[in-house]
Length: 151
Image (cartoon, rainbow, N blue to C red; front, side):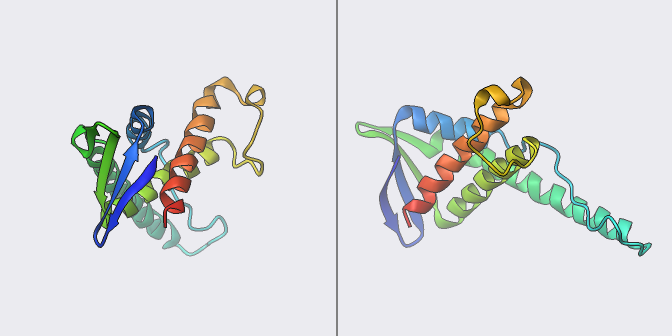
């Protein structure tokens, strides 16, 4: 993966076929889990539950929008086959959405793994049902790092 061109309102990246396929599969994984927010465990205000419900409704709407955008970003027409590889061209706004999607995937996987302090865990120590999350977390981090390293 490498940055080919950055223009005022867009980015153009070149991928190897396997990288493009991995990115498309990865961003289609959103959401990893049904995340919800708790405002406070100790708040005794009777309106706390109402505020928490509003927050979770807002988060659900935001996640639905991200899921829609993930579908757009992973569409086959975003990845143009050329003689040099696969070109992925996105606007600056779409790039920010992509970074948000990758970060959400990475964080949701980390939470599913129990929020470990050490991220390089021996695979043999990860329960089989969580191994997928371990690999998705690292793959999302890989792409996030490469998209940000180009700045």
